[in-house]
Length: 432
Ligand SMILES: [Zn+2]
Image 1 (cartoon, protein in one colour):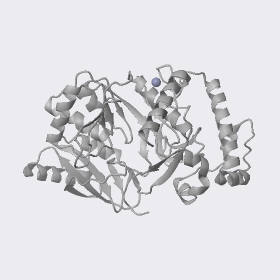
Image 2 (cartoon, rainbow, N blue to C red):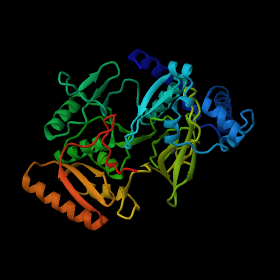
Image 3 (cartoon, rainbow, N blue to C red):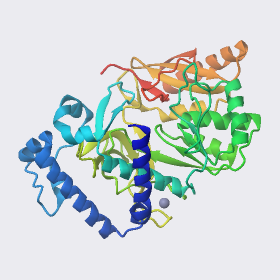
Image 4 (cartoon, rainbow, N blue to C red):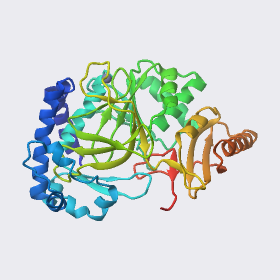
């Protein structure tokens, strides 16, 4: 997508917010059902007529696209997984529509990219929904945002890049050593952003550095996070460092559904105008697979797509007065589990909590290549070798005792990155 197209679609998204999305989050339930039902009917009809994969599946499973209850028809289809989409890719795309739309590659920690097409109509809704989430944090057009995500300056590029039109400043998340952090704060304290935006892992480093050094950011109003699991520790550090709240975003590159935080921060609201979501049972009690259907993507419709992500609890009403329900918690990918010697899956969240309590650790990554064995990559705040040895031994002993895994700890900045420059906290490289 070029800059002009990006700008036009963003403006259309803002218009959509002012005309529709600003109000639709408060619509009564029956009205929401009616609108979604109409959208889903149109989508099923399009799938039947134009999408080879679904023409065949609808016959096979007896899906009637003319039915007055499209949600009942949708449930006749089996849940769709990424593997099926990868293996039958061309059958999901309508070449002419897909060519006029936009395309992206998903990355994921599995290292299996998937090309996804989206229609421009869908992209406009996406921009509008994101704009709405920013408005919940009080954002106004051209408020300054400091962004800590995919920017990676080349040799001849500046460390901090400013987009004067949007009033956004980009910082490299690959450079988080002490000198770079001091440079960033120097800039931020003069430039005075109203919001921070980025990967939780990068923003957590910023918050912890500010706490250690007693650095403040006057005028900051909020933080927008996305793309990685947001930990309680990260929220608390940002609150402690800058006195502001975190507004989290959940979505996937497969473009099936989105959830956003509100001012009350008691859960994530589903963006019902974007995708239809089903929570289906997982292997663990009280946790559910997020299965979703985007309601507007005619370029590459994915019906009942298993996002691979897990939600905890069920839908409930939020105290903010919006009618769209909230879900208590969204966990990362369901394959974000440690695998023990006997093949058992163990949640990796416990380890994140453990690391958050070791103040000498600046960043860490847990890598697993074989069951029962963890490789921990660490970068520390201090470069003293006495400190390094002490921290390495402490972590190695405590983790081995706590988890029962064999643990190797290495000091290194050579973290595994995804194609989008994210640093996942846990990388599962066990061959399946
Ligand atoms: Zn709310």
